Length: 589
Ligand SMILES: Nc1ncnc2c1ncn2[C@@H]1O[C@H](COP(=O)(O)OP(=O)(O)OP(=O)(O)O)[C@@H](O)[C@H]1O
Image (cartoon, rainbow, N blue to C red; front, top):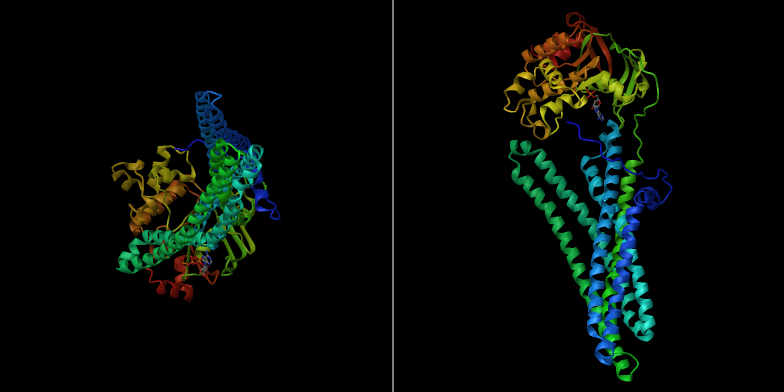
């Protein structure tokens, strides 16, 4: 079942690396400006309404309680109405703000994941998957938080200015007194965040460390058990968890040192208002209502000043996170596609001409490989471990580009194909196939999601998988576990072969893909392959004599080039190296 297409990201990250991180993220924010602006305008209106309430309380107290010139209930209703209005507006503002945040997160996630999916094998050779996971989650969140919540906090800060102006208009000297503590609170807030910032980084890093330990041990639990290493691994986790505990405790200590100071400062502010305001009331220079109103203002203005520190910290974290995300997005895929006309009739004629290839880490795997495999031929690649056999398949499917020389499919350089076409024409089955946690049908139909059940079954029959699938209670609808652990190694390999066969590629590369099935099943697979498509070029990386026996021709690979070429019988007779490799690998019949 293919899920319906979702909306694509509305914008991307600006490609100019010279720009600041915020300017690079700007297209994304712009794309969601309608939502963001709506939420900001709403929260601004909400705050304006909120600022009116203490002033109404002031007038209510002064006019209805002290002067007794007006009706108290009128003020009570007015304040209640404003409170309800503020509640509704704040609800909407928050709703839109969170929607903006999650829309931004959705886009960022899709941009990063889309890029990761397009990256080549070489990229994945270099990076750690745990690190990528962290970038795809916590870094995206940090950036999203700042982009969406940063402006909202700024709006709250501007409201502080408006409230201050209102206070000045009511009673200027008292307004100055009421605001006296604010800069100190702002300053202390920034200091506190500065003290917390490094430790919060440490917490993130250590949490990621714990996650890696847990992840590895769950993935590798069978090895842990095989070596009875449970206790040792538990100790490892305890150590990592201890690091997290220390970091959290330190964080708590810093917070508990600063928080009471900031809380008390706001109380000092209130006391000052009472003292100075009280003296003014006694002298007849202020009203009781003013003191009450200013009390509310002091309490209302405290959070924005406290948040100053937070916004600075969020900004720093978002900048670092954005940089890490941009590092990924700025890494171009080293497998470039260009427009070209492709050989229209695939025949499966594969040729390596003077191919040299080194992996990104510099390991030279192929060194002057010359090899031609004719359409319909079945060729076995034989050689010592590390000779370069698997690399040959990877270059044919263009998982990597050659360093020198050319790989030609049907007379055309593989670099001149569209990748999708090339991968349709060159099917590759690795020795450790990966199965997704979906049904067997979907696993087999991975390369052709629209394939019918009949086609899936035909591919499974050819791969020798139909029999055991039918024996499962849910048959083709059975969902395989993570990495397909509920199936045996040989069963998984057969599912993977069926997956490749369904695409019906003219060139099929079995990279030791039948190592976990027994010789008889392997023979059956090859027989049905032959029957399925006469003329399919097949390359098998072979470690078993039985596998070699199925091939028309055997190529001995040594140090990344062809050392001998011929039928098994010919090589046995003529090549000392071939006999040695067979003997050293203890190839069994
Ligand atoms: N992803 C990689 N990054 C760096 N070096 C690699 C990578 N994969 C393989 N190599 C190196 O390239 C050389 C050829 O490897 P290759 O896997 O092609 O050998 P092979 O003949 O298939 O070996 P085996 O029979 O053990 O599978 C080896 O030296 C190997 O260590």
